[in-house]
Length: 347
Image (tube, rainbow, N blue to C red; front, side, top):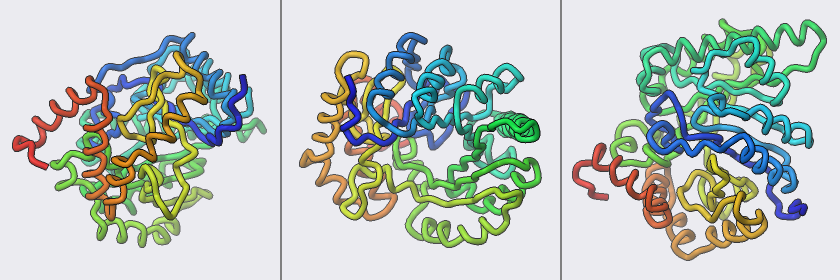
């Protein structure tokens, strides 16, 4: 049955919470929670629901989606239905010729995540030595494959780079643009986005040391033209404050047409927050989407989000929403994380 009248324009689908990294800002806390990786059959079943939804775009993320058996078949199911598919990778998985072939055949866009202009910065944020070198290797492999495809007159995937901005890598943005421009020739987009205050990035210790405040945010946005001017080879550089992840904005409808899926088909009520409304593998999408929209209008949600004036308020609101609506497993993980980062436990 078609559900194309629901108004969902995009799905963000975390294919797994398995991850070789332990990124300090990871909204999904991947690598530190149960992987919940779906089977290949479940991947296809979820993909079929997305196809019937009428959505125009899907972002496959994680965790590390390239660790998931059957990811490419699900991506091709979506792509064959006319849906734009983007896959986000940390670059840890070695991109050999076979995997590059799969990516070329399965997705429209590949984005590699890098969080620093050098190994010291990136590897500290990603909490894994060698992750910077492997991400650059992956990016260069994708760049070489894309150039070969273009030279042969074949359609090629779009190639992007994502850089999550925190205080400790804020000074390296210009050097990073120069690095990518020097190491590649076919990157289409480079996006600098401030860390989303969710998961570990919403905890008080991270907020105090790494989350951008309003002054940092204004300065970051003001640097956008100069950063864009450094780009070469047609690469487009952009800066975003990620505000479309706020549960509701009275001045913008951005984000309200985005559906966020957990690996096993659980639909989050909104974006990156821990509230879940049920699984696509168990109930119809229209029923779940109605619950998600209703959640966004609950008085506690509306009142909590109404307090957001800056990123620090946003982190406080995220903690409140996650504690109120998280599953029992979520609450155990949140409590364990906060005992580690905040000994007082005081808000």
